[in-house]
Image 1 (cartoon, rainbow, N blue to C red):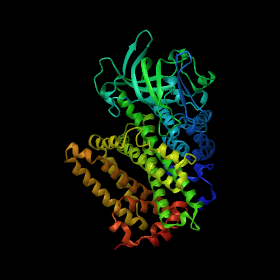
Image 2: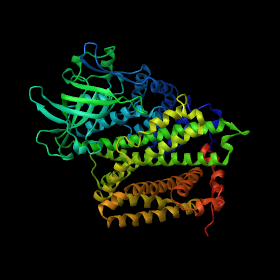
Image 3: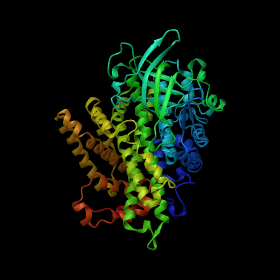
Image 4: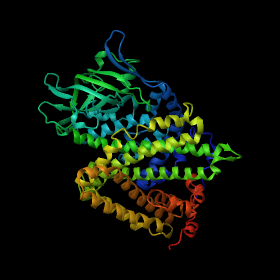
Length: 612
């Protein structure tokens, strides 16, 4: 069954292969990929994990200290909107995009007849975020922009789509989404940017300002604006593609920009003003700023007044990407913690020999397992839906998947963003004083993680989205079917008590939803956040138990220990906080859970508590 990982052999969580050390991600991808997909992907993910753990991780530390700089004007006072990147960031860009982090999910990569599932892009993004979650933002928006054009463009923007999904860096363009305006924030319907059609130029012209523009100089930015006589609110918004370069000169690619050997001449650029970059706590790799549109050239994407619907499709993918990035931050923080605990000595022992540290590392590992399992299960559903859409399938099963995704996607982002902050924070504590200073990566992990609960919707906004999914989309029906199917598959005696607990909590969750349906809107909103977390815990517990059942059937009981611990910490109520119970199972589970040592199912069954 293999052996566990000896973390004491490493000096730190860098100059290693992140794919090879992440057996959790390996397990999840084996589960969600088809067999031929995984066979094709595994060596490529191993190569990607190697380059992320060495070159990209080193470059990311440099970029954190020497981030992008904006030179809005040239020496003559003319607008040039030039973002100067350190060479290390440009090197990371080329390595990631040419590895297929976006392209593989949209165009058949070499050696395959069809694209990989969106899950593959999410997996690569998770590995990338071990080194730099900030860089994950442009990658996610490039994929999101490609998804919007693939789905809604009538063909007029094909050159931009080809650039977004290019596997050749010189032909690549990056995407962005300029959504937030100062007066609106999360209230998208309050957007004031306007669009008018210019008959002479054959394009639209946008006027207004956008307040938080990440990846500010993306070559293909999507923005919402209101056309003349369009109604107020979200229903009156249209989606536009705003090129960085002057669209009359064609698509400005990365190769074109590199050929300028500095700032492009003003006549090569679109008419807009990059006002300033924000001074941010973290995610330094991605420049975030303020943009003023003043009769800026733009192209309509799809139909007028369909912009909000189009934006939600992009947001769904970006929220999933945010969750994958959160998992990446957790994975790196956990790796740094395991290495530190296995190599740092205190009072004559390595600190991972002390009971409190063992319990902490077990629970950090279980959190990572739970987050990764949930995110890639949702990624699997999203991938299936996209593949069905590409194939023209509109069956009831696809509709059920959509309704389930409407519930699970906001929860994925909501829960994992918070988990990333908590995990990075405690990883800093495990490092001690070193973890608090800039020389050690946990400092940056925490700074980068702090934006993850904010990007693509705060926890409150997402919680209300969960309530809407349940009320308007009847999302509980496919959710119930998914939970019940997983619980029905759990038959091993080592999982019996945990499965009983989850079944009972599922019934209570069902009762809670019935009760909320009879309450007024104010109380439903008040309960929304607790409800969202409850759904995560029940769904993830059922998912982990089903995975544990499959692994037990294959001869390994490690996932059973993970599932039981998650159920115990997330769903069980223990008398006197468990202090009087004498439970030492977390210490016995340390080696299997933390070091990924295999577990003989027979010994696990013998250790399973007997029913009263």
